Length: 396
Figure (cartoon, rainbow, N blue to C red):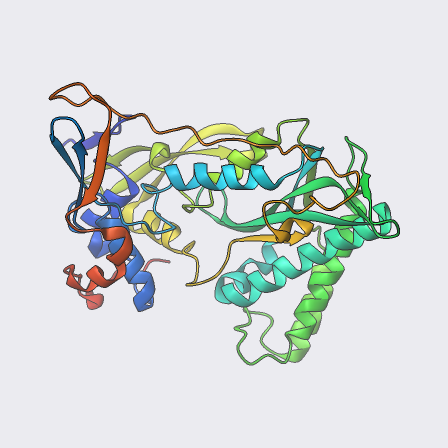
């Protein structure tokens, strides 16, 4: 018998991450906590009606258009559009019109399991080490107090586990001696090999300081003090990768790229190519960076696809975006610094297109809610029928 396939169209809302979560609830992995199941529940019912409805009312003729409420969860691929545009706009309003550099700090695979089992602790250490590394080089190489921000990602294009931090570093800073703005070279940040050595040394030192922490779940092969000592020595021999490249005047493009992942995780609906309802598999596109960034297709069983998606859920309250140096001051961090560029990178979010009213053709709408999910979504989750946790499928 031929399997029934759903071929995803660009404007389809049927085969999305949200639909997969909703229709294949029996494939949700076991072992999650209550908050993680609540997040999956919210995403599963996003724009499906269970969270209520909003409406747009024509100001001229009173015609109403109803549409299902979105969940507003920061992991949801349905809810990223306006939020990511607003974030990009706010960041560009703070960045000075000067050269910028895109820097990516990656952890070696030998640390990945530790990170996954200790998300909060490892993320805190990762951000601290990245910030210390950049501040050391800004101080020693530029003699400046610099500014930058970082965004934490835990996934690769194939939905695999790959923790790394994207940083956008401004090419200049406040001179430590004079207090004036000091320009950096427009096409060169810092020696990458030097940064790698400092980054590695600081992270391994941080692991050593965690040695006596009872909250840490250590991976296989690092359960005892002696094993951890040997594990750290092994890590010191591994390559710790750092990517660094000037934005070449395309700072806004880099910010937009990072914005795509500030309001969702791991997988966009546009990457889903095919869903086989009978075989219960999902096919999606991914980039193979080991093969020159070529676009390829991957098919996974539904349970494995969901498990790979779920493992990237961010712990409650953890900030994946952090600002450092003078960039942490607010929207006008350099207004009192002599010689600092007053112009900003600047990018205004595009105004949403307002459709014509089918009744009178006007474009002036008033918006309201029969049930406002964005404010009370988490309270309404308890009212949504949940699957029995005993039916959860454990996925390797």
